[in-house]
Amino acid sequence: MRYTLFGQTGHRVSALGFGAMNLPGVPLQQAGDALNYALDHGINYIDTAAGYRNSEEIIGETISHRRSEYFLATKTNKRDYASAKEEIERSLVRLKTDVIDLLQIHYVNYVSEFKAAMEENGAYKAALEMKKAGKVRFIGITGHRPELLTKWISKGEFDQVLFHLNLAQPFALNELIPKLTEMGMGKVAMKPLSGGFIQPVDKAIRYPYSQDVNVIISGMVSIDEVKENLAAMEQEVGQVERQELEELALQLGTHNCRRCNYCSCPVDVKIPDIMISSKIRDVFGLLPKGEGFFEKQKDSIMSCADYEPCKEKPLCEQQCPYHLPMQKVVQEAASYYS
Ligand code: SF4
Ligand code: SF4
Picture 1 (cartoon, rainbow, N blue to C red):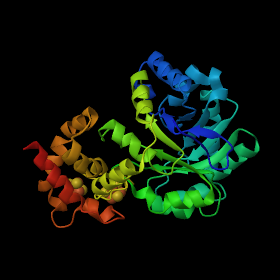
Picture 2: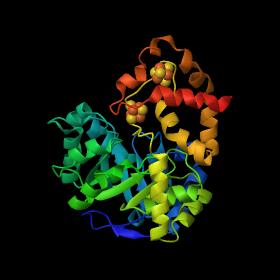
Picture 3: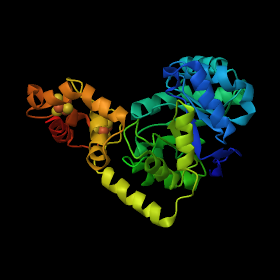
Picture 4: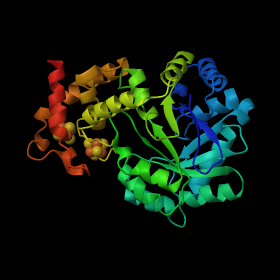
């Protein structure tokens, strides 16, 4: 596995990062075994968030005795100073550590949210204060809109960005990743399987691995999953394979959905999941999680065509900053069931 210098932090981080988001869904013993196995096999970047149920506590419980072996990244999705500070302090306790290596302002997709976090009494001030106190070492930001992130980092207030990069969402390649490289910042790609939709898993992992990023965060919950992810990174990606993966990403990314979640649907169609997975389903089929999702969504997807208020002008499309044809894609998805 590849190790690279992580922005200006001085750390050499493993290309595979352990995404701890789903650990709360498995027994503690299994979670601890997966985390310890990952550390034993060279993974040295652990990613969690205050908002991932008790994920931070699981990390604290199972690997804090090995704290010097991993770079620890967590997140706050609070926007104001007081609640962000309280949440960061809680993270330190839950993670059983004296210092968080990377504190990210989490899930910033709206201009108004960015402004709130950065204003005088915003979450950024809390992160900065904790940094001055030696409780946080670096500050990052996470979001789903690469073109906005590119603008937001230009003042040099952040050390790192966490963004989507997978076969169905190659959008960060356009301007965000080149800008991060130019500024010498840490580059972390998330959701290589787009939340459990993309297969084959090895291709899904090797696509971001073929690109200019430091760490690929993959959500893992078992030793077998760690092994599968590690195996996909055993060999470097050569020129021919890189080109094939890039062509595939162009094809699978034509839906153009950034998963920004600006859209909402009155009949509860999970629009970004449909947008992103429809092409993958056509080309490769889906992982079991994706198939289960389509089963659960059947009634909502089927009701889209008859939903009266959307007949003239689809409500979702009026909310999308990219003006995407979501109604058409959802109604095409309905044909999967026939
Ligand atoms: S067009 Fe369909 S998916 Fe869009 S808001 Fe209306 S019912 Fe929901
Ligand atoms: S369909 Fe549009 S609004 Fe909805 S998540 Fe995708 S890009 Fe965002």
